[in-house]
Length: 107
Image (tube, rainbow, N blue to C red; front, top):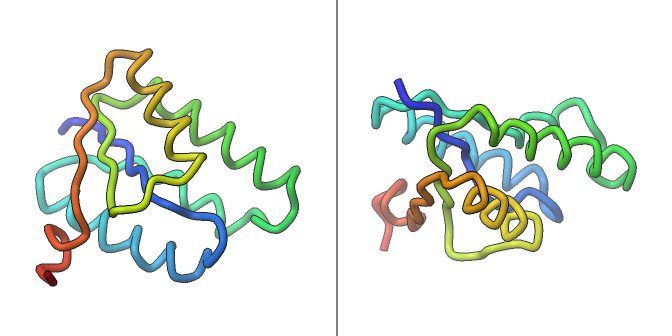
């Protein structure tokens, strides 16, 4: 299985974004991938505390070294996602953009 980094928004409405990333993770699994999901750090770190948010961000960026691809989900690209995409390109990882409707079937 290829390891695919799941890239989608997290900050702001963390609860909603965690629910979305669960769907993205399932989608990647059903595509035969081994998803790498940094969002789950938010279950143990407090996104409202800058030091903890930064710790999670740094840990997530380090996971990119282990991945074969990055999949960018949704129509909104956050500042954190932009940094992950840039870093992925520096690592020569393939970047795949996937719309929400491809995952949910809703148009």
